[in-house]
Image 1 (cartoon, rainbow, N blue to C red):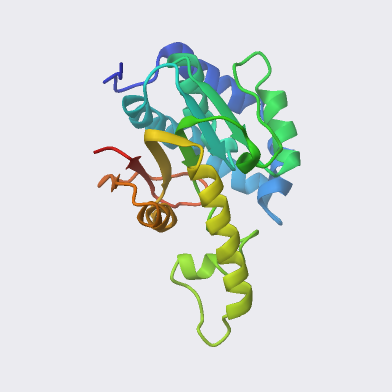
Image 2 (cartoon, rainbow, N blue to C red):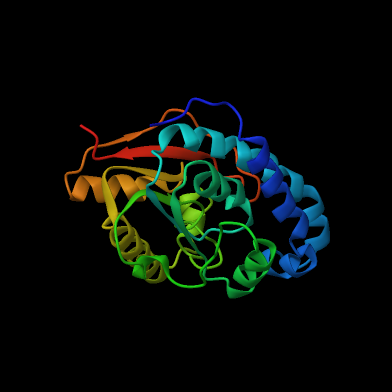
Length: 234
């Protein structure tokens, strides 16, 4: 049964705040920034909690109790949503992140909580999930330097390397295919407005009905608006 509550429970909010307080922001600075990490986290720390909790409440209304969620590229910004799922809905969450340094920092801060982060490829996880979280992964400028500018409408046609772009496009399509293949139907995908086209393309190729929600939600770190996509719902 889904809930209509407008806020996370006090115990959940307290747990999320405690984890944010325990994070090693000095170490995170070098993970997220080439320079200026201290200033970055001073500006983003509370914003991550506030905006992340807002998204978590919306997500709570869309998920059933006791399901399974696969988080691809989950990090600091995903903490409120992850904690809500585990603590309030009793769901199994599997957050994966290929930044090993961030995984170590997150797991230290999440001791004595229901969360464990994995430094492995989410595409290799076994089993079925009714929720897939894929936010700011398919347009990551670090891992996809040739595809990302095009996703944001910033690509220069004079300098675009078509071969390298095509190689990155194949990588993205393969990741989407492997992750979407694990999604039960009906299911839910949490992604960004820029990445929704990849989910839509997969659905068209496999003749799976989908519906992109009309409301978007602000994020703290990258700034990409989050949207929710219902998959396989007739």
